[in-house]
Image 1 (cartoon, helix red, strand yellow):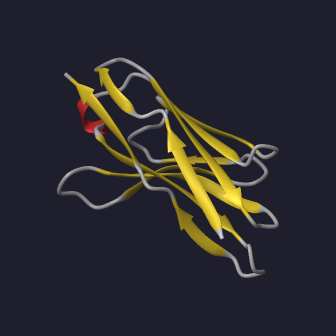
Image 2: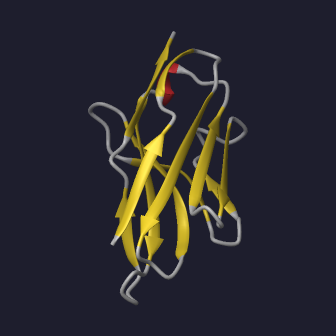
Length: 119
């Protein structure tokens, strides 16, 4: 199986920055795409950013120009640098990845990390 462990969430003032990290561990051949979703209270989970194994990023329109996703394939880790945060970015951020520990590509989730932006 694949385990995802997130870190880096917390409380920040509007206009501030945070960096989230998510490390994958377990028995798997390789990690494919990785990324982040978020879920604010009373709202559906939405994609924030994702990145392919080769490093091609994809962003939600709401975070373009403010967030940067990157990954270190040697460490099976994905990062999300979040700058110029605002109150609308307050949510639980969930890391995800696609991996194939048993030869079948599956989607895995982290436990989530809270990001709170105070105005």
